[in-house]
Length: 299
Image (tube, rainbow, N blue to C red; front, side, top):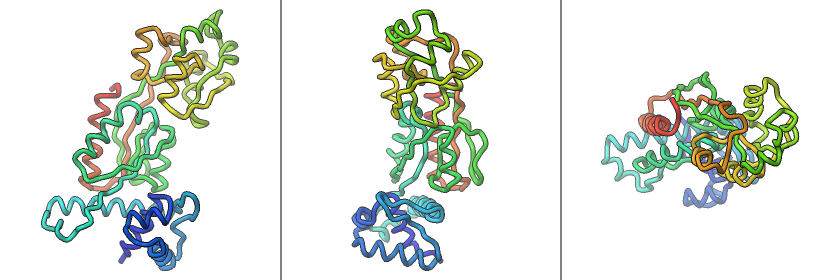
């Protein structure tokens, strides 16, 4: 049998990033947490926690942390069905669910989903942000229970639900257009005009260049890892960028932003993948995500 007291200690250390913070969350001493983690590692013959700042899980530790989350959800469902068990559980701890999501979804349609879910569920969310083409890797590594991803193929052991499409437009301020594209938007001009990139994983600009001109070009880039900053920087004339249509619609209407090449935009299909387990709480999270996607994404 698994030692769930020690498992909870491992999960809390990984969640909090340190033994001290885990001890405060568990209402025990740091030495007690350290002892529980070490005992489980010795028993399994595996390292579960990489000691550092912050502490992180090894591959084996990540899988055990996910197991703890799943057990926690199942226990909550048992308490829902048998309220008398509540008298035996004085701590009233919430379940923490780890989810990976891309920044643009988090800044637009995803927040209503998790707000509606946590309003009625005894759960806390631990969100990890990554590019939509990479969030599925968090599932494959066992780090999260669910993810918003651009990958249509489900990760092993996971269920895949189509959510809709997020549309992106290449936009810039009128002043930026006048300054950098006086003779029109050309590949030569784009090679000199500052652009905005979210991260080194961001491939949207390369895809847009392929759609608009049939070939890529090396771009000078500002690196801005924030969806909201992307829009603000575009309006301020700092550079041109690929912005979610839903976030720039009003700016396009009032003329604060214009499209570089009208009519050439990108659609990114998004999917919700989660571990294939019949856990009602996870199903309710899925329902909240799908409902919010129907409101905030294009079919």
